[in-house]
Image (cartoon, rainbow, N blue to C red):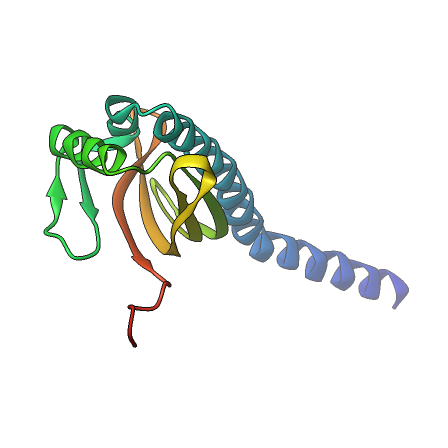
Length: 157
C-alpha cells in the first residue's frame, strides 16, 4: 500500500512538472525579452538625448511603423528617422520610459508603459502611455509597431 501511494505521488508530481514546464519556459522567455526590451529602451533614450535620429531609426525593424498621435502612420526606417528628427528639432531633448508590462509570444513581444518627454532644462513637455510591439529580427529585439498617446489634458477642457 505504501509503495502504491509513493508511486502515485511520484506520478502526480511528474505530471504536474510536465504540465508546468511550458509555463516556466514562457515566463523565462518573457523575462529575457523584458531585459532585452529595457536595454533597447536605454539605447533609444540615449540616442534621443544626443539628438541622434539616425541612431533611433536603427532600433526599429525593417518594416516598422510608428503611429504617433495626430499624425498618419510613419512607415519604414528612413521615414521613421525623419519623424524623430522632427521631434528632436521641435525641442524634445530627452525622455523617460517606465515599462509596466512585457509579454512574449515567440519572436513577438509587446510592451506597455508610460513616458515623460522633456525639453530644454528638463522641462516636462508631455506625459502619456504607450504600447510597442517588438519583433526579433536577426536575433535582436526591434521596435515593430510603436504607438503612444498623451495623458495631458487638452487646454480648456
